[in-house]
Image 1: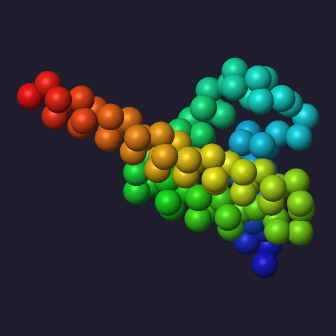
Image 2: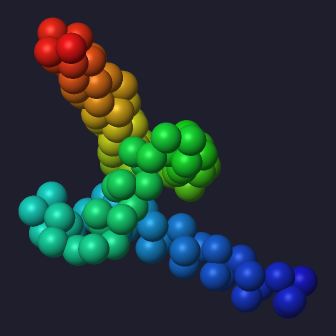
Length: 103
């Protein structure tokens, strides 16, 4: 049991670091946006293929008993879906329509 303790501690520290970097309770969105780690973790969720696995991992990391974490997770997931499925698809459609008109 003592051999597992350092691994469990490392996993808990990694979980705490990821969740605090993404959704800090003591910093505004503007303060978070100044850090490279926040941008890196945000962009991982927008990558095709990897983003799905990332959100699945985050759903496992979030404590469902903590309303703050759960609300932040739901809002971030929906925002990611809006950006990737809504804005990106709209931009692609506009570019295709523009190409169709010009060619």
